[in-house]
Length: 241
Image (cartoon, rainbow, N blue to C red; front, side):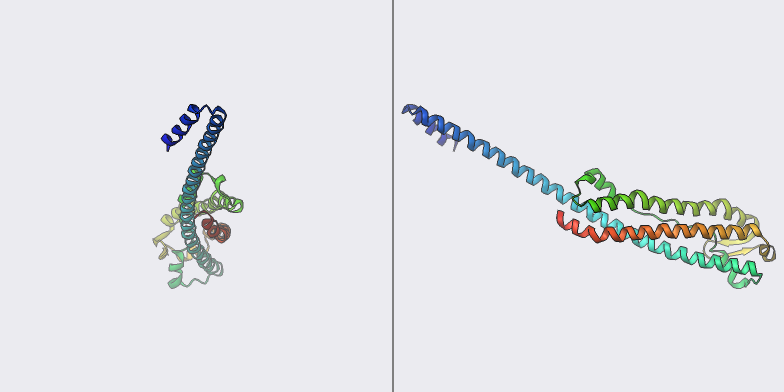
């Protein structure tokens, strides 16, 4: 093709058709420029397509993480709500002085315990590396930032408070006042009668219920945020695929 154009230029010069030669040369330059622009456009299109595919893959990872988080949050919520019921049963028994020893041993294994929860942010960290500003859906971007920077922190902070209560309040108390204790299974006080009048233990239970209620609220907010994100996430994934 290059030899063909060169031959045309040479013929025009030999024939002395300078004007036509200049017009042809300009036309050739224009064609070359158009070819370069088209090549750049195709390259940009390929790069954007590659980026879109990468974003779609990362958002799919985010979706998987959120579903896992939702299941963990739900499980923890159910357990914590049940813990409140059990602690309330123990509080009522202690305040009324009517302690059903056979069932209370199980209940005492469930008071003031903490529940660790692990939430996954692998996909979010990947999308941050790509650049959150690249997301075309501003609502999705804002909700992701809110969940991963606010909701998760609230959940971890509240569960950390529960853990602190267990290690600083309940565990030392168990070592001094219980004959036996198994996590979530049973607790056998050294003296049931002394336990009835132990205001420190009773107050600790009441304060712990307040802590758990705060944890439940944080879990509810996190679950609600996940629900909102998932409602718009699939549509965004389809846009990039």
